[in-house]
Length: 404
Image 1 (tube, rainbow, N blue to C red):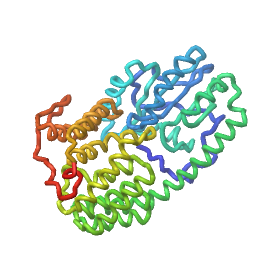
Image 2 (image 1 turned 45 degrees about the vertical axis):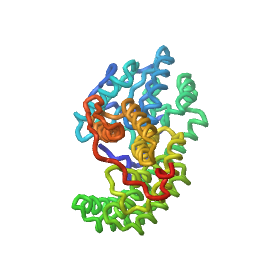
Image 3 (image 1 turned 180 degrees about the horizontal axis):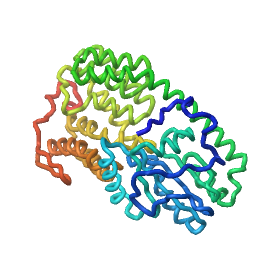
Image 4 (image 1 turned 120 degrees about the vertical axis):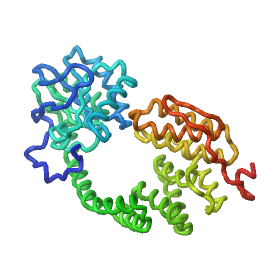
């Protein structure tokens, strides 16, 4: 798949797609829903939206596209969803996952869905327009030229004026287009520079992790953090290596304490999810952890996670963290609360925008925890689990569980 981190120099200014540019053709591998759009018919207006099933804001936008298609169909508007960013190891797997998701989540879809795994649509549309990230919307006017390029949240405002022909020549349209191109150039340049810096580090880190050379892995993570000090993935991996691989409790706890403080200060459910997984993962050994501090950090994180109302796109981090939050409650003696949280996570997984293949491991882990808490065998669709001996360690004097 074509990367969206292509540098600005790779797309010449004369080739930039902007309002008024002729729209490129649609070149995709399959049409999974609706009638294929092979050419832009004169007199019709097309909304072309790039999206993916794993993208929360994309999913939120789909319902609005259904509304727009119904509302403006009589005005000659045709909506097309371009699934050009599905994540899977093969095109066949990506196509199958997309098709299953559409059948389950959007059975009453009223517009066409095209699938492209080759990267051709990114080359033709996303990269030359400096569109970085999805969802991205393109509106092709009645003459086959771009009338709008931007985020779908701006469509409701722009579309009526696109239809009457006043949008493309308006000052607002020109200002938004100029801002989009300037911002896109900068973001692509920054991403390209970042990629050039970190790719060699990633390669060394991956080799060290695969060979279980934890000292080399730690060196790689620390090098990555020097380049990206606020990257939560590397912050979490830093704590993981120190605490659970190298078992340097003094250094690891200092890293984890800072991670917990930063996660709460940022009010970021993603950061809090990363932090709590270092504290309450049933598969990890916590025998060397200071008991009271572990539970104190777990309590703070759990309360903040459960109270969080995450923005679209972060819901997954909240519900996927419920396994660790449930383990915290289980170890404090609140077994019913632990069971409730795992059941909520399973319910979310059932409706989550992801393929069944991607969900299977997550479902299995959730079922395993639930089976252990309930002490009975449990099944969920094709996955079954039996209880494991995951009883928490005996509470220490003064611990939350003993106090309860």
